[in-house]
Image 1 (tube, rainbow, N blue to C red):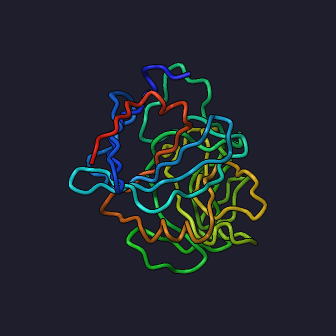
Image 2 (cartoon, helix red, strand yellow):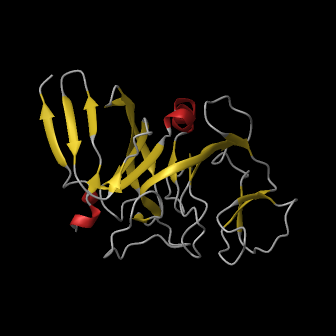
Image 3 (tube, rainbow, N blue to C red):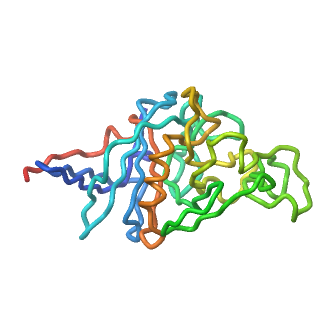
Length: 245
């Protein structure tokens, strides 16, 4: 159920070959003027682990659809409000927690791309080793941070290797979720390669290898790309008008 505090503030003009679609509303999630690229993920509902991703790019003040729609896999338990550039509705009960198996909903900046080998892109990019850990132990001072375990005092009991024994982190993007490291607020959220069995993730947004590479090569630091991730119930009240070409 949507309330006024959770309606999306987003003006998006999607230009197609035959028409333009204007999406406009007045509250809550506002796209910064400095942003010229959006990765827009939507799902059927809060519990769905399946969704779509569409890229948008702003040119001359108007948003244009870029490329084909991408199929994605989200958290095995769907979505919950995350901590990012938006305000969590005051009456929200579905809020992201550590270990809940849910992907974060809302608006998020992207920290850096990553992979097992160098990749030339116009965005910060890190090559991670097996000894690079993303800490998901909320009692650690390194909680929700990626660190070189050979160079710090290890005070954590739980973590993820940033170079796995499979290809899921061969290429990816770090989502800037829970940037203040709020205890049990959720950690180690990425966009990465999906597993072969189509299983839901622990909270990340996963897709094919070709598509994550396509996104990495598309985003540009100067365009301040953002991830907008919502279930359909949080965007259905957005004003939608179709204008003839």
